[in-house]
Length: 121
Image 1 (cartoon, one colour):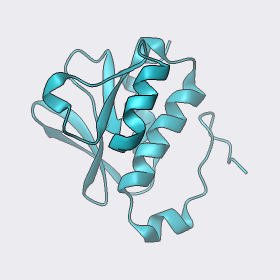
Image 2: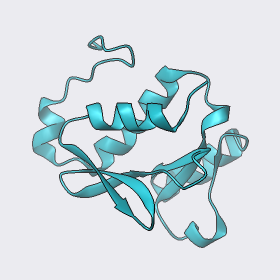
Image 3: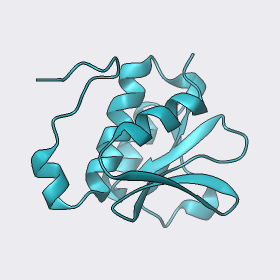
Image 4: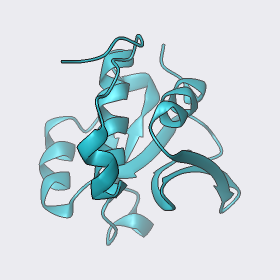
């Protein structure tokens, strides 16, 4: 089963990512821009998600994705760790959020390894 330690390990493997505590929880930032938060209970995490995509994502998999009422106006979505299919799905979600926050110079040079460490082509 995927857990919060996997979120941390994958996040920190992405270029120029650093962990920083904010709001009494771990957050992960690329070049200073936040792209992941892990709430205290560590059963979920939050990632960047354009608002126009979020409603469709939640409607298609409500057991996996949701937005707490206090975050409704944000461009973030929460993901339940226990609902993820596997490490590859976690990796893809985290990389997508990283790409939304990363500066262009990092995106141009990024050749992501797969969740098992192999380079994706």
